[in-house]
Length: 328
Image (cartoon, rainbow, N blue to C red; front, side):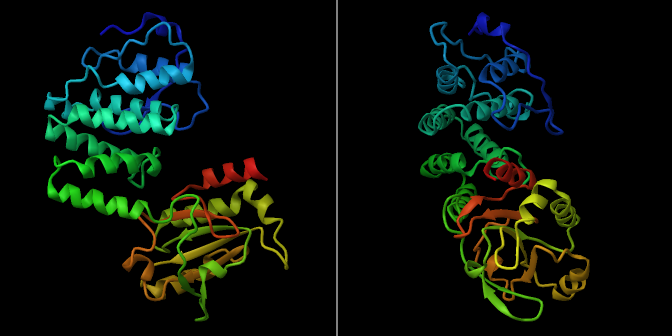
């Protein structure tokens, strides 16, 4: 199928290497226009092994073009050719571009597109499993910059209703769905008991602060130490912290150690920041043992409001800074 020649006049959007397999990504945010995204897809996918659908010239609007692409994106892809699984420059690159397109369309259209994709893949169990694994890699894995649990949920719902995957995969994805449904953005964060260095215990829901950075940490982790330093050095957060007073906390970091090496944790406390921070541990390791929170990696960071509703889940310092820039 020929690519619409009108699209080739769109602006070129700079792409950069994503990982060792050579897959590239476009911007992780929607700051670029859909025109730019569309053109970048055309440039990097100029490969006859992955023919793109031709968008009718009558479809003019960005959203309408994105919806059309999402519907017919995989139409010409040969799902029965399992050799394409080992060609990430074709299949995985196309997948990365595809999930970017989903960012530009309404949620119900995205869900429909997911159904179309897995419907086309169902004749090849191996390819079906491969695409399920790609959704896990990009929408669920802790290190992915594309994490999107709200879109991963309908993908999981589709594959778990099928009888195509191996039982071990079904069990894995069922567990992931269970964990994702815990502590979703907009819901009240699960309560837990934390213990202070002096032995006193408190409930997280009783923590008094307009905003709380809930920070699951480990003193062994270099990354955790780096994030703590970045929090202290952030000019944006310094401005928010400056509103803290004796009678009111605008923003506080609640740092929770969920492990069992308490001597190591106590020894690390003198080097940890004390201002605007509360350091505590999970005495019975309930958070991990009872899977109260989905801690896929350390550190894991949440931003909560004063009612302990989740504003940002499994987030980054950059996203927290962006939130306060927008909302303060």
